[in-house]
Image (cartoon, rainbow, N blue to C red; front, side):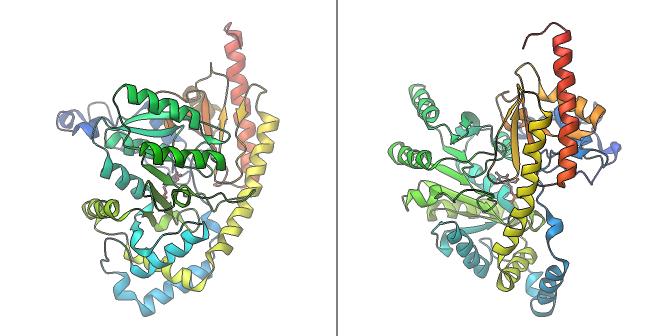
Length: 437
Ligand SMILES: Cc1ncc(COP(=O)(O)O)c(C=O)c1O
């Protein structure tokens, strides 16, 4: 059975067709699947996304950081340190909470973003993805309400589904999560006698929205969290991936130790996603439960990659590398915005991210981007993530997520040109069939 991860589809790694699930393949297992697994259905869209992995396709679909800028000499040097000084310990099991020295370094990385946390607040995780999983598994029973931005991180969707959360989306606009609509939603849920377990939010350079929550909204959100006792999971993988503007205080910082914010981040975007090292900072009582959850999931994060990061951070200033990455992404973001301006129809809108990896574009409502993806792949050899992947309630059908970090500027320009053509053809067809708009 092939599993397709729409957030990380690798254009360079086409898989053989035999791995595709044939009709009837799952029949003998269907009655045995746990309800949480049965709820995760493969859709035609996912199968289509698999095609975007073919090498001839220009993929604007994945969320790939640019790992080719990591210096070979740096990698060699750090691996040599591991081999000569720490070989046995690098290959050994480690503590569930992560290597103590790495947790100290993580506290320093967080301090750079204004997050004041202590070593004891930190649990190292296998990527930011596991931090999301542990947050949801720790708090959510089947049927519990979880609030999430609409759209939300497509990679969080299967986590919500696995734990059978009842996700209620709260819309985003250019200033991030709409706090007015959040209050309305909370009031409505209150009258229905439903109390959300938590709010999952990505305040900086949202995936897939591309927008950042404004400072007044951050303050209001924390005021609401305190007044209504709303637990917030703040996912911040992109705070350092900034091309413009000044950093804003994190929700963790604004919470000021009141204990209503759980903070998640990762080395995936500031260093490399293949290391699979992220972290969570949380109040002690929460961290203890998450630690137990992590023991069940994988005992501990890879000691080898934790040590790699530790030795890297001892020798190099991670901020220099991030600056280099940001320079590359800035140029690619500009290339994408320029191409959208030139190639997309006047009826389309899109966000103008000041950091992160993604633009969120919205087409006229009569276009379904899942259909458009089929045409884009087969006719134009270009791929994106359809907006519906970022919702659990069927919204987002006329939107798309476009990634600008994974391919060079000229490829972005060509990809958007082809996509613009596909969109224009779909609009022409709609008009020819007598549709309005
Ligand atoms: C919002 C968000 N959270 C978490 C993750 C997962 O990060 P990691 O690669 O560290 O698991 C991503 C990756 O794209 C992301 O965009």
